[in-house]
Length: 343
Image (spheres, rainbow, N blue to C red):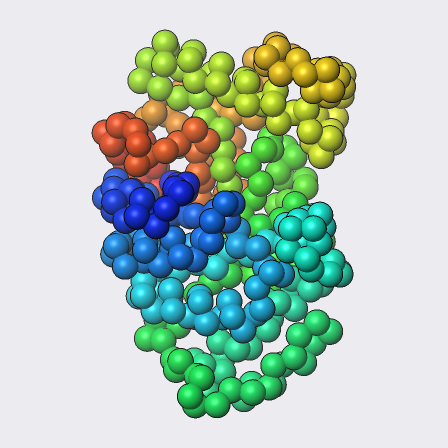
């Protein structure tokens, strides 16, 4: 299990130095999410200011971008990083597609699948001089003259990861993608039943091995150097679970652990603006399902025990390595490296 992180900044000027620091600490990958800003511009800055670390959008919104446009962007970033770029794709929800981007919402799962196949077809044209002749339900590409062909890469095309929660998309990712970004709010039990089983079904149906696929996820870890630090972090995690738990989308997650009554109380508190007391509904037992608890050096082993072979790469909540104590993060990363090296 490898340790990665993400970076959230508000300007291009703020990317280079944090990216260098994160790389120097020894993280496996650096992801930039699409929120207030265009992620590929920030990724371009990170690309030319790092040498080893993998980079990519944790989730780039797919449908606002034409596959050909995103194929060019990804090709340039793969070239700039000498093969360290990862293209992460997600659909977002109907409201954002229709009301924020003014797009038609149609068969999002099948459209995402075709989108991935279309980009791969375009890349095959550039990398292997194959004819461009893609015809699908949503996209059609059949023109590529030498003036507009960027030519092959020494390192080959980048991998494509999918971020999703829908069971159909989880299976689809296992069939056609190279990796998967899991949603961070989960327990090991619900992650297995809602996501991992679907991915593995997709891999099996496509005749692919699990070793050909990378699964990443943000995880909750109550950790510190001593009991006092751990107690402080435990309360932060308790508040976070209470806040997220009041969302209707997570009803089934709570019900899967027979916590339906807790969910109803959290929902009622959200309706009556009792945000300050939501954490009181979260028991220590619940924290143990959502998180691991231990010293920094113990955390990788605890995560391995909780998730088994489900995850290949994790990001830890409450982590801003570029702002925190580098030595603390180096201790944690060293522990992950030690776990990787152990038989």
